[in-house]
Image 1: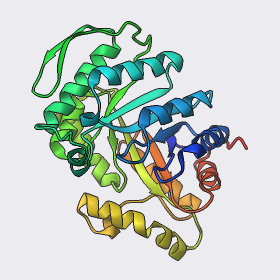
Image 2 (image 1 turned 120 degrees about the vertical axis):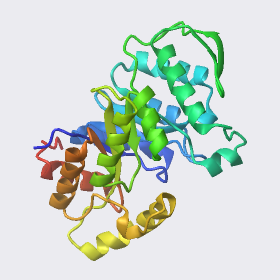
Image 3 (image 1 turned 90 degrees about the vertical axis):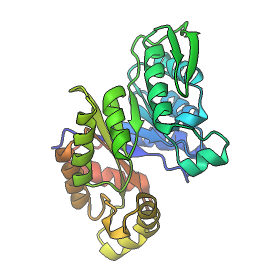
Length: 294
């Protein structure tokens, strides 16, 4: 039996009104995490996380990720603090650069994306700890901001990043790192080395997203995954055959999850592809030795 946390993503292409039912079903199965997405033009991460937390009792809910250019650090800390006080211990806040083209199209492209991410994460974490923040940074300026209702248990603030300098930054300033879909065990090992180079503490977490399609017919699985691996491969700059997925039979998926765990992942979040995602998820949990609750 694996010790890695198992999460499931509520895919950005699924209608928002389906989130409450899916969250309840995922919790009933016994999954550890539910992760929601904030991509430009799709859904809001804070609002989606609020819904998922409100309709469940145990699930940890992760936001992967909120683009730093789209949000004021002061407002972001206020929103996160509200959720963390209402649902203590059940929130993970992911912050990243955002896709450069999307940020430009929204008119919020940063002059220095690295500085913006570092200053955002640093100030948000400080605000969530109840500190008064004075910051005259390259991208962020806060003149004595302090939360009136900081959370008793500040949520982890993690960085969703890909490139080497950003991974080092994550190790330096964040509570954890979120690694995007398509990265396999070797990628996770390399990322962990860069995170550690940045000065990560021993409790710095690594969360890995992975496309997942469960089926006994390899051709059908490959066909279902094709749009995902082609699109992600183009974004990552690698051919589709080098885009890692946790797919195949339930036992094969479980083995891929274990490989990510050995490489350094503390949480693996499955992004289900194909029909009946909840049923697929249940078969994976059983293959991992989890007691499926329904």
